[in-house]
Image (cartoon, rainbow over all chains, first blue to last red):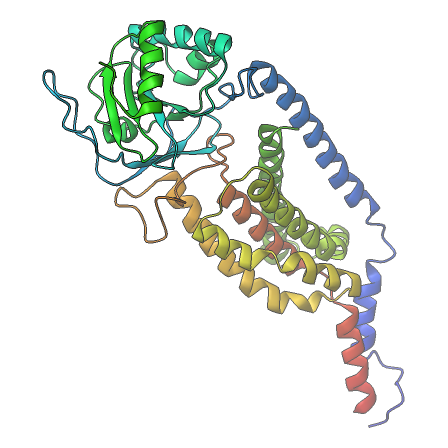
Length: 242
Length: 192
């Protein structure tokens, strides 16, 4: 066997021939097609994104986030810790002084939101889209927030629970967006785990916690502006309204 | 662009990956069971761009993943990290291979990408159908069943990773013989 390349087709020649075969044929059209498709998709995404911004998704004047153009009818919720028991109809609330469970869920755009004992007092407002009292309460509180600004020393969060397409005003995202609701909101799952974690027994439902995450006060029903201010004071002082 | 626009953009690209994969599979089946000379020119042309295209997909996947975690603050779960481990390195390695026209990289890349496909498929599955009892990967702080993105009601982040990995595997399968193979063949021949 000789080291000199022979006249017969060698392995290297066959491989190089195969490799060179494609070189004569331009592949530019493939790249042009790919880039064109990507550009078109990008333009469509930007245009669609502008449309969604008009409906929501930008920072509100009060510093919160307007319920974004989310599509979630139900979120993914996980609860860590022990659920609060429902509030009794009469008498003292046995859950006062109990640390709330950690609830991690999704906002309407899928972003994660956690409600937990994080060193800041909270007011957790639980609403249901079909509840007429919630439909009256949300614009009232939003009006207060627009006028007074989002409190910086108390964390306001909402849980949109008991979501049911068979009931009116569904989905909650459309309702709250229409109200320009600026409070970060967890959309509950089909099992309403987030609502159950806080022992919801009526709507709208409010859970006030201190900075350690301990329940200070729970109440349900529509609130006047004075009562709302009392809830804020309870969160700040750690003492239930008299 | 807001996050919704980015998610829509990446979701369309993910669906495009499946279209590309389907086209490659159909082409391969036609050549295998029908006319072996079918699409010969197209096969050569796609084979020629397969490697740089696979690299571009790895790069876009990496950049997209970092955008969601670093810009949008979506905390990656444990399964996300495993997928990152399988995908991130190819945004560099496939670039080098594309530059050197070294399609032999497929021997190393495809097995790792297959692992990524398995993890992404499992992650997608538990996001679409969350097990009632949870999974051993889930934590309360960073639940792996949490869908940060849910475009078209099924395109989630792990599904995007799955789409990218599957298309990269398909592209690597059809990538052309490399200059490195040619050099090795010449060396063998000369030394013989």
